[in-house]
Image (cartoon, rainbow, N blue to C red; front, side):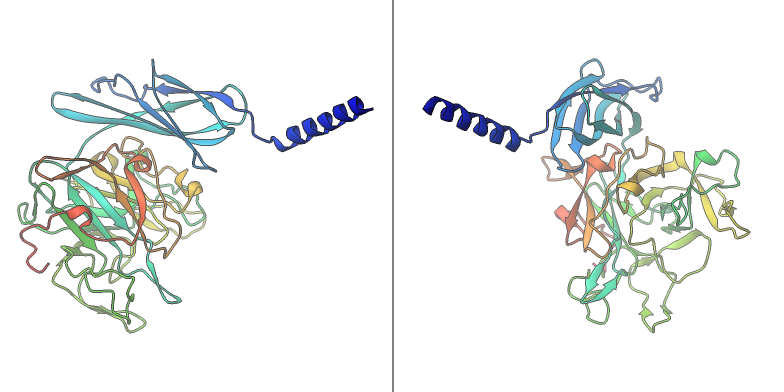
Length: 400
């Protein structure tokens, strides 16, 4: 009788343990690298770093490739796959990267990641603050700014540099169709702002940054953004055409910051409003002959909206700021300019997108990571700030 009771208790315990053990069975997965998009003059890396991040748990797995492949043992789930490699030839550095989604829900999952290359550039986005902030119950967005940094060891000039937010999709999330020859060779924006100058007016030295403010005033005053807003009185440039009065009586003052110029616009407004939901941001020097005229979208009705066509091959730096993963799945720039994306936690979250530090030189100059993959190069931080990490102010900014 005691023996039967013992076996009964053991069986119940085994069932209980089995019922409680709900750990999902691990699956084997393979990532392969497709180099078919690399041109013949780009040297191939000896190996790539492959990083997998579970989209639900944020659990990460990392491995070096061998013969353009790597195997993983994963918890079942959906993963963001990031592939990164570096090479150099004739003094030019190449960042090679690509990203994909991996559905590792069953044994033997595979994904091929196509990689593209990009040369390192001197002027890069360092910090992007676009989502705005709360002032009590009110939402505030006029203190946004974009900080650019000289990541090289040579002086560069910001004269005639352009900045814009891209408008590749309509409000329904459908891709816009443009009446222009070779439309896929261009990116498109409704407003392009340009730094003035004769070519040598605005030098930016190694380790120096320039701040482009929407409005270069002190937004901390209660009648504007309040304590959490930003004091942008030291910004080098502001995207306004001059003093104006808004519909609600707010006076947009003209400040010591240099006024930017409109390289092109599709409709008139007194200041730049790139959007708090996040858009792909680019900087570029307009090539000779680039037309300021507009091309027109083919709409679903008789109404057309306009955009400025910008050759994609003149982009210096691109950062894909998105609203969410669904938004990030939409292609806005060629992969060689940005093969990843990032987003803040929400609108008016008082957060910014900040580039990661790659190294600090012996003289203290910071070099930022620049692989042309926003998902790898940037992180989201609270409390946006200009000159983060001790970026230097250009000598010609005498009002800082």
